Length: 222
Image (cartoon, one colour):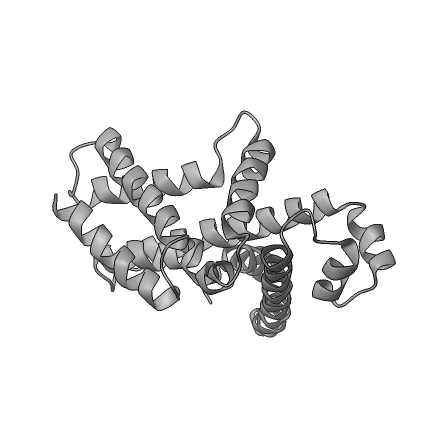
């Protein structure tokens, strides 16, 4: 799992300036473990909720079934989210947060080739959900709903998908693969559309990674 620890590092830096170094290091270690465990638990819930929507379809997914995914009662889930629509909003927000964080960290990994970095980023974005989505006849419906919700959440601002494509475009410019940001954005959009298509067509995650790698290599070399 790829996790961005900038939030933890920021807290540590602030704390480090105000207290004894040995104490701050201990506090940082404990704090990092707590946050890491919270991230793992959130991701596990996120995957279970996605499985529930994908397995049943949006219309037939009940709050009781979603409560099972969260390992809480239907009543407790209503107290937290109030409606199925808000559960879907939460799911999209969590998936997008992981996607943006994962792509940033993948693109920053200077030990890998440009193709490897982009592929790793796409795996964080959509690849890791392929097996869940491909096991369901409702995968296209859930993906389209996710895109609509993401646009509604973004409002007048850029969606997470647009932010990720811009990250890729900038990295392509930095690496000298494209001449300017406009060309980089065109390349990134082609990759994005190919990734969407693969998510709904390949049989499993391994096939997705194989095909997305071929596609990225082709686009970069074109």
